[in-house]
Image 1 (cartoon, helix red, strand yellow):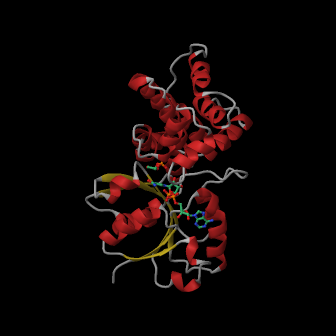
Image 2 (cartoon, rainbow, N blue to C red; image 1 turned 90 degrees about the vertical axis):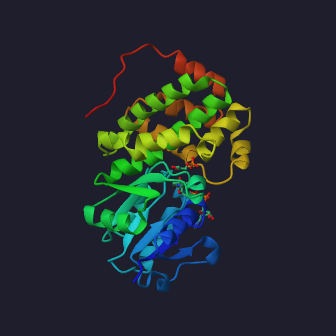
Image 3 (tube, rainbow, N blue to C red; image 1 turned 180 degrees about the vertical axis):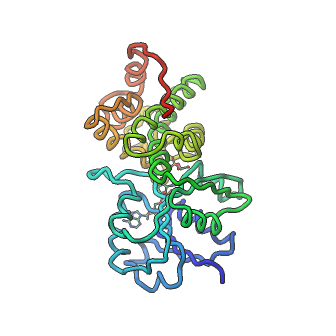
Amino acid sequence: MSPRVLILGLGHWGQTLAYLFEQQGCTVSCWGRSQGILSADLFQDIQLLVSALPIKAVREVAAQVAALQPPLGIILVSATKGLESETFATAADIWQTYCPHHDLVVLSGPNLASEIQQGLPAAAVVGGNSVATKQVQDCLGSTTFRLYSNADRRGVEMGGIFKNVIAIACGVNDGLGLGVNARSALITRGLVEMVRVGTHWGGQVETFYGLSGLGDLLATCTSALSRNYQVGWHLAHGKSLSQALALTKGTAEGVNTARVLCTYAQQHQLDIPITAMVNAVLSGHLTPQAALNCLLERPFKPEIIPSQ
Ligand SMILES: NC(=O)C1=CN([C@@H]2O[C@H](COP(=O)(O)OP(=O)(O)OC[C@H]3O[C@@H](n4cnc5c(N)ncnc54)[C@H](O)[C@@H]3O)[C@@H](O)[C@H]2O)C=CC1
Ligand SMILES: O=C(CO)COP(=O)(O)O
């Protein structure tokens, strides 16, 4: 019998994942909020419960799921790349709280939905225990969607969360016409910030040099398909944040993530200058040009690349 999958969240990514699972012969059902509250019959005979929700919706939906007591054999797959505002929780943290006895896997990587919907090849990584990640690889992996596994679930998730902020910075860079050299510096130094915060958060250094960290940075920091990049681009063209968001179709998680990361970094005395400047521009405290000047006027320092 073909594996049965339930997808929560019918946005761009949820629909794309539905397409990928169907391509692999899975029987897919989907739930979006327009269908009202969840019901227990949706969980019948499913092997994978895939959450492709924006972070702001995860807690509400996870609470609904938990109340319906889905069978314990179901593997939860979280594809959200965001941080909850007040709690600093990742989507996996939230699912873990509500469904502590289910296997939980995080899916992340350079996966611009529009390219995948065109059938173009991509790779991603599933973070979690080896039995659960193998099952997801078997159901979802293919010759066009190559899936790696990684036991460092926290690192896999943090890479996908952090890169959104740097994608905004690169959108600003390109919108100001600052060139490829400057963008390359932002990606490289943004990766250092990602490692600094991500390891503090419990991820392993080497994970950030993989698909969910460096891989997704390269995709979203260099492509106008990225909503986060688009937000930065519009800000560089003089738009306010609300105008930039109105011009961007879909969720740009980096806007909220930048603010949450700055609060976290301040509390833990972590230096994340690019993220801080992105946040200053998003909150209207600095113009893109002023933020650029702040970054360039910082004192010279050794290039320290975290390796362990
Ligand atoms: N689009 C992409 O290429 C990728 C997106 N992601 C991540 O997947 C997540 C979702 O992104 P997209 O699907 O692109 O966003 P989207 O903006 O296209 O869709 C979001 C969906 O969530 C629904 N939603 C909002 N609030 C809700 C609530 N309270 N309850 C239920 N549903 C609610 C909306 O109706 C909408 O269908 C984000 O965390 C994003 O970072 C991850 C990989 C690739
Ligand atoms: O995460 C993504 C690709 O891997 C999608 O990026 P955006 O949310 O910036 O569109």
